[in-house]
Image 1 (cartoon, rainbow, N blue to C red):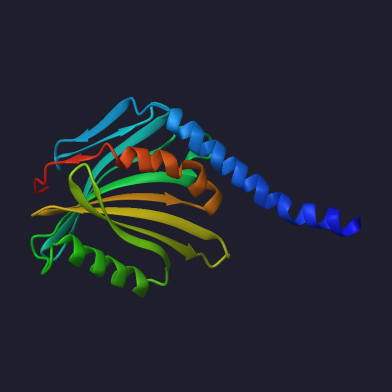
Image 2 (cartoon, one colour; image 1 turned 135 degrees about the vertical axis):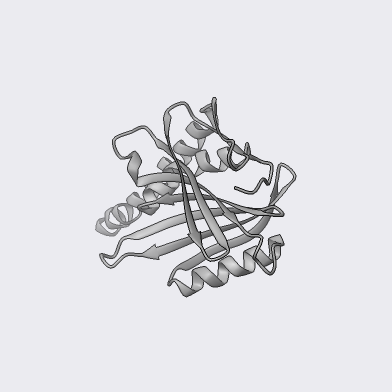
Length: 194
């Protein structure tokens, strides 16, 4: 009898996590993406839930021939919303040697592997007639916390759009990943140089 009780307590946290993940997936599927963020500088739009907030920055960073424009951050409007953020960026890639989806995917995998992250998944996926490359990775902080991130790369002739889902832990990742995946399905880009 004591072994069965220990067995139940051993698997109870895993069962709870699985159930809470399934509940969040069902809830996210029922949440309408009824607001649209549009950035006219870079020609990007994405739908998001009305319960989320947007912080637009349009901050430009220069590095040699390349430039990066951080357009905005979207996050849940809840007390711990700062632990989950969707970042929208656009990078001028006219100086890149290989701007193909395969080249971008290979470069990002190489870059991330040099920064001491654990790549969990790296796939090419078409979304709304756009070729994307998606990478999910984890980073271990000095304090032992695991940060989980999903990045979606959409290259055009001049611009690499990066949509990053960044969280401060696997529990936050699981809670909002279905929201992010739904949002990605609404993305539109026009490829303008920004």
